[in-house]
Length: 333
Ligand SMILES: [Zn+2]
Image (cartoon, rainbow, N blue to C red; front, top):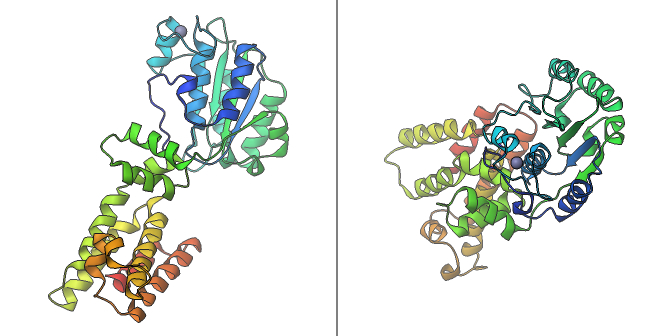
């Protein structure tokens, strides 16, 4: 999962939504009553990593005003260059945060922070840690070296050792209202039409970070080509099969976008079905649906929706993705 953190400073109050997290952290920062460890917990892609970076910016600024980093002091300059010696960010190596990463962290924490203030340690996707790494981190949290602030980021507190959770102040994060999520998406992808940003926000359940991953994977572009292809007649069966298999190859390598693409396929064929049975008139349906409404009868449409259902089930059972996509595309195209 790519987060939308970059090397620009995001002020605390620029983060959309998450009023509870802002209130909790804002109070702690303003009163300098910081916990030594926080757990930012909530769905992927709603701003946890951005918030962690904002907190680090404030703590490592040498002349911060309340909850704003100044942006110009040596501390801010080092953060902006992505190179502050008292800022450590740990992300999973491969699928998980490994015990070796925690051991290396322990060694780094033997020394006091280089500058005179805090050291901030951000651990992303802590729910990926196995027990061994988790226990090693637990020891650090039980006897934290002074002036170190840990920010753990995870999708849910349940996936963590309860002993780790009990050592942290839990800061909950939530999905955003769709309009807010769409605004975050357009701020990152200004070329995206408002309507598509809103649709992406809905497909990603109000988690803009997830929506941006879908966009990066080319979700809309692939979906549009799929719908275009439905309209093209094939000269013969061999060309049809060749096309379907090529398309299957393309979508089988998608990661987060694949299940969402299947949802879009289902919605599409359902809409065509609604038009066919007269539940929706042609004027109110999308032009793509109107263009293909005569191509299939109800049995064929129902078979296509079933094919999507079967593919979804097979993917959740970890069947061979390539094969699942081939069978699906031969059914759909
Ligand atoms: Zn500063």
